[in-house]
Image 1 (cartoon, rainbow, N blue to C red):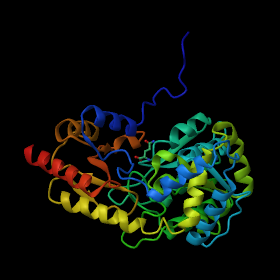
Image 2 (image 1 turned 180 degrees about the vertical axis):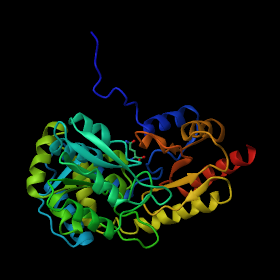
Image 3 (image 1 turned 30 degrees about the vertical axis):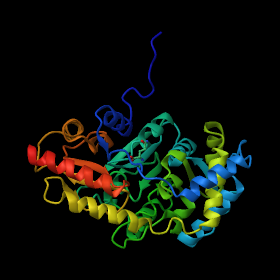
Length: 385
Ligand code: GLN
């Protein structure tokens, strides 16, 4: 039988490819975004405890009550807004499931969805599976800022959703309050929803404050906002995220969620709820924690030929290698794995039609000695070639 792919051009994600290559080549992996240091031992102990106490059966579809209450409390602390755990908060399998559910809930055949490139890789395939079409608008390097006039020109009667991501992966840029105002003005009186990927909400640098759609009086009413305990608690493998949306949008999201993952691992939810109850400020200090790592890596790389591009947020740092090589980013990243024994993430896979670029994304959510070792290997490689 001839089997016809629904996503013929989609390969294995660049994150998985580079992590596999790092293992094969015995390279240091500062590509895929995950910490190489342990979670808070009090969080792991909470997980051991709740399993021993028997929290091992299905959680409610929308998330365990205690966790949704903690999420509501945290949102009120961060954004001075109240959200109803019953009707506005849904726990999902990482941020990725929330993104997928929101897209399936909103996008119909023939609809258009605005995304910004370089775009996180999960958006476009989900739009296509829903029958929609992604319209990509570039963020221009090196600042990767929004051009709202271009967005205005791209809107059509078919536009149904606009996906924003701030702090932005992989460009490390952030949207400010003026960007959200511009977006709100564009969408006023149009039947367009917003999907805001805010998983790096706590990781903004140099005193910047996160502008959340949840704190914006107009955008809040038309947005799905996606968050991640993986990022906030340094536990990406737990795959626990959540989605905040007005009740009518949450109802639709849950219609998808209940037939996608149904509910999220019960002990993980109870452990996070218990941990946040006991340590409600556990997430404070993330910006300083990662900023010190960003500065350490940038200082170690300065003058090496891997030129750090200012990072405004996320737990990544871009470097420009154009002083070292004219190779494509994919080829150069591959060479770095083989010769420098360092795995990074090239930027071109985040574009449908990649411009020629010489940027690599490095993950700074690593132990200081990992970052120092990676920088030393990159410097030594640069000095050799
Ligand atoms: N969010 C992670 C990153 O940007 C990747 C997660 C994944 O591999 N799907 O590196």
